[in-house]
Image (cartoon, rainbow, N blue to C red; front, side, top):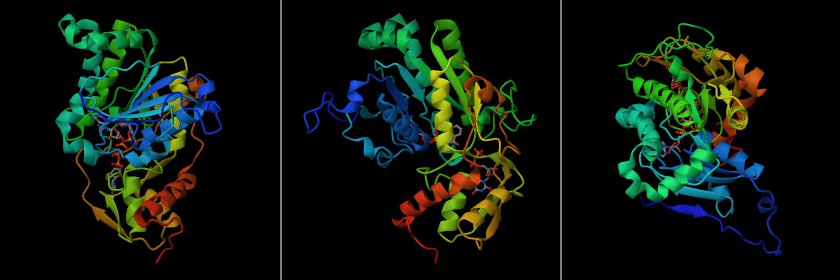
Length: 361
Ligand code: NAD
Ligand code: UDP
């Protein structure tokens, strides 16, 4: 497997001849798949800040090196260009598995690959455990797999999409969902549901320590500008003086979580004692028309709204019940939509116009 590694020098001594502070404290060795993406790169920032050593695995389907460039040269950071549909083994303490096309536009682009991404990721691990005929090829990997078996904890970033078009509101973790298995969204919904199943089977059957997060709609700096998700669409449209495209009647709801709240939740889940699944989302619920109004208030009160036909199987409502995360992880979101949106807007403004102080025309 050809891959590209960007890393600092382990054991690097700073100009003053002293060992950099981060090396004195022994942190964890952590893999973040999809770490060049929106959520992943914020997670990497926090882990590095905490003193851990982080290896990012990403094929750059939607991720960008710019999201991680500030870590290049850091001795505790490595970046590997690699597709998770191919096996890879590394000796690590924890695996945050985020790699996956996440926006409807991207996951519908190659639905079969979206679905099998999960199978291939787990196949890599299952082969090591169950298929002796692979030992020759995977012998070296087996040793790393053994280290993984005894040490690594695995966190799956699942999604609120496992609830499909929910018939229960708000959604509690015990709700089994309402998913169309043959619809255009099912490559993602069913792919993540299967990933949850595999995670639990791997835990029950092979004793691996696992964690499952069900993430609700998240926004913030570094989101792909043109990935088609509603917050990024509205913000980019308002900044570009284009109409805000509301799909359907705009009365469908979502609950929007700021990325730093999610990252805090993921880390508490990984480091805590509970498997989950846990809903990680902000219970503040908005219709798409209400979201458009917040975007207008934040960026441009004169931004027009343009109605477009809605997409197939669009969930009518979505709002997390986070009682379980509050009680067992001591976690709840702290950033409201009105507080978080301006932070994302200044990042988008800078990326679109190259000037953080760009004035409305
Ligand atoms: P993103 O598209 O910004 O990040 C995904 C990352 O995975 C990208 O860097 C991409 O290049 C990488 N990737 C995709 N396929 C890969 C492959 N086959 N091999 C290696 N890398 C690959 O998306 P995000 O919003 O940061 O989402 C991260 C995770 O969180 C995803 O698993 C997603 O399903 C989950 N999630 C996100 C949200 C949200 O609102 N952002 C909601 C629910 C779940
Ligand atoms: N949506 C919209 N305008 C857009 C993009 C999306 O009204 O430009 C709607 C979409 O129909 C859905 C909601 O916003 O009802 C959230 O869509 P998104 O793709 O962000 O996330 P998901 O559907 O995966 O929750």
